[in-house]
Image (cartoon, rainbow, N blue to C red):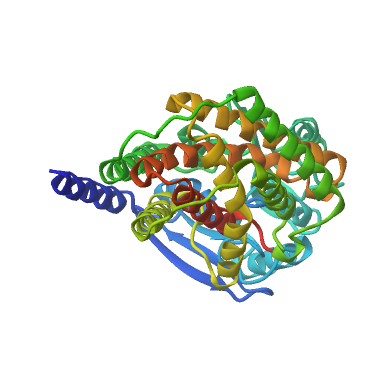
Length: 454
């Protein structure tokens, strides 16, 4: 029965992937700019309404803009979506001035009638270019504050989230002064800095403002198919990772929480004086990974014990990690770049070793708390503590890593999701180290794939 259900779910997964393909053609290529700039090229079916260049934000990639690009392609626009230096498939490190020059070269290649759409950093780079070259139509989504005296654009649509960054919300209204009379500001309700890029409503608004046909959009269908792929993946995991209940241990919850607070304080103090993982060359992320490493090492004395890890437990851990990484790449590739290039594999190994001690501490100190929802609640509390201390450290000692403030809450959500999946692995292996290896591998893969290389 389990094999039959697995075959059915895999069929659903494959069918959902096939059904979510673009309505037109999507091709991968590299612009011969300096540096070479990877792109996705969306070629629509039927009449072509215009040419669009889409530029993502910091610590993002061309795949993050995929739902918007697919919507534009549905509506008849030909779209190029690029990876800035240090992001996605780019082979070079991040540099804002190099990124600006690459965009300038690409725009020279595409021609003067190109519509430009940018998010956050991408929007600010386009704004900076608009101070020296004319644009016909610009769409800026949550643009990072950029000092410009004059914007040479005939029409400009500016979108921000209702809960966007305060600096952006204060600065954006000034664009009506710097720009032309064709500036339209729109605030998306119940949205933050980037989430509305996946919402059907804002995508429909952009398409309609550009003169496309919103009735051709298939965004709702794509989101539904994406959720179907995720649910199918999780159901397969539940089928094959069923195990025995985890043996509870008597725990003093206040003492455990105080232990984590103490390790956070130690990490804050140590990482404030020493840049431990500077060699990773990850923009704004070295501090976070160093913080996690120090926390794990500080917690070592609290869980010193022997681990009796068997070969079968290692196999289960590695197979589970491989399955979830493969499933994330297949199911999440429409929303974020999750593959590793040659320059990311050694970072993947280094991050795995750095986060493993804390993953082991979590399994030994927090996982045995029963019921499962109580352990999940305590774990979530410790991640919120880490978030608070990391933000504290960034705002007081490492201001150059301030971008972490924008993404740490997303990382907290990733941690909580991995904890819930780790419950299945722990029940199957009954071993804290095997489960910690699984969590460290999946977490390191995600970090190595999404963090910007410098």
